[in-house]
Length: 175
Image (cartoon, rainbow, N blue to C red):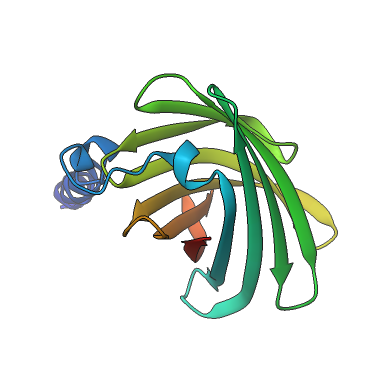
């Protein structure tokens, strides 16, 4: 009986893994999000952070300023968190081809991988996050969906050891 139950659980888990959304699922959808165009110039962001239970624990307003040189996007971010914390980050995002990007920032472990198809941009990376006086590594599965030329919505799932620890929801508004 334990073997049957174990096989059933593995079957269910395998089914869940195979149903994951992929960037290429959006290849024929419109409008096309070209991240280096959308994030060039000034963009305002409004977001909430939810714990793994869904409770909103923090919110923020952020100012983003991007500069595209034809190969690399330099994106300066300034987050003003509701608890008074101010956080800054500078991304250097390199376009590899029409659908692939790589990014680095001081608090990112290694290189972020980006994928762009249709209105969707997926960014995968590990971020060093301050937590109770130390720094921990949190994996981000970050999706941005373009709504129109001015508005995009971002949804990020944050995991540790494969378990969801938080979610981030952001609305971007381009000036």
